[in-house]
Every structure is written in C-alpha cells, then in structure tokens.
Length: 281
Image (cartoon, rainbow, N blue to C red):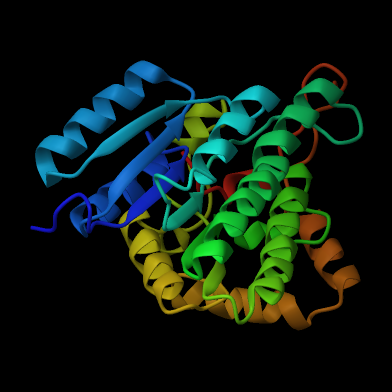
C-alpha cells in the first residue's frame, strides 16, 4: 500500500450521497486520500470513518454550504493550500429545485445558481491556479445531458453553463499539465429525486444509469485527459443528435415532452422533466 506522502489527494463536493459518495469510494479504493465536502457534518464524519476503515486512506472532512460565500471561500482556500496539494477536484455538489423561472422564488433560484454554477466557477479557478503552479492536476465537473436541452428549465441552464465553463477552462489550461473534464450523464439511480421532493423515477428502465458506471467512465476519461465524458452509448447518441439539431427544434420537442406546469404555478412551482436528469448527491 502506498504511504500517505505518496498518495494523491482528491477533493469531492457533495461527497456523502449519490454520485459524490460513489466518487469518494472509487477514488479511495484506487489509493487516493480524500477531502470530502458536504453540508451535514455528522454524515461527513460517518462517511469518512467508513472510507478510512475500508480503504486505509486519510479522509479530511470539510463541512460547507456552497451557497454561503464564506463556506465556499473556505473550500477554495483548501484547494489553494500549497502545503496540502489537491491533485483532483470533483465538482459534484448539486440538487434539484421545484421552481419555475417565470414565477419561482428568486432567493431559491439564486441559491440554486450559487451551488450549481458559481461554486463550480470559484472552485475550478482556485484549483486551476494551484495546479498550474505545480504543472499537474485534474478538474472534473459534473454536468448533465440536460445541459444540451434548449428550454429545459433552470437546472438545464445551469448545466449548460457548466459545459461551456469547462470547455473554456480546458482551452485556457492547454499546455499547463492540468486538464479539465465535464461528465454529462442522463438519468442516474441516486436519492436525488427524493431529496428534491420529486415523485418516482420516470422514463424507460434502459435510460437509467448506475452511479458506479457513471463514476468509472468519467474517471477513466478524466485521467485520459478527455474534455467531455458521456457515459453509455444511448446518451452519446442523444448528445450527438442534440448537438446538430437546431435549438428551435429542440425547444419544440422539449415543450411537447415536458410535464405541464400546475395551474397554481405562483404557489406551486413547475418541475420540468429536465430536473429528473440529475446526477449529484
């Protein structure tokens, strides 16, 4: 077994549930020390203890709500700590939101933006600065196939930002020894829907991916230096189709396939089916 001094370190946000927990388990099994980030300190401690016992790695706990600027700054500072370098950042934290862009509560929409978009920007920037100085490192941003859906709601808009951000980041990192990857899964079996107050899984069974399969594919692509990782054949085909169709066609198709908003939308916010294309813990 490698010694602590020789093991790489990965920092994972949203690490106690869903894809985040799977990333933590896979990376620990592969010999990475971890910094795990989530809001619930008790759950973090339980996760850390389980990973230490099972894999014999060091696990640091960092409780933070990424919607709070002070907490986000603390995570960014950890990424920039020269004495404790982070070799891999996994920007995974996220959640679904039952809010309409037109009539939803702006405070909730802003918090959603802060966690799914602003936090990815701030932490990617902090990691990239430290990694470029060392001439090595990798950044993995968890996006979604929903980011390709024109008119797919707030979640889709934020995931579209994550895709564009990662593409631009990868361009800026070219030749530095640091890589940036975005993974774009579709439906994934996690506790995402229950935590968001959504009803049971929709869509055909073959459309649903296992978290471990998504994590395995995305880590393989990350360490290979690929920019975009789309796990599974069906979603690679869908991504290719969405990439060539006019956005007006995608909007029209999405409008007919999405759930209708409730009539009392000012008090009960609509949930489009793009919210189900969720991936994070």
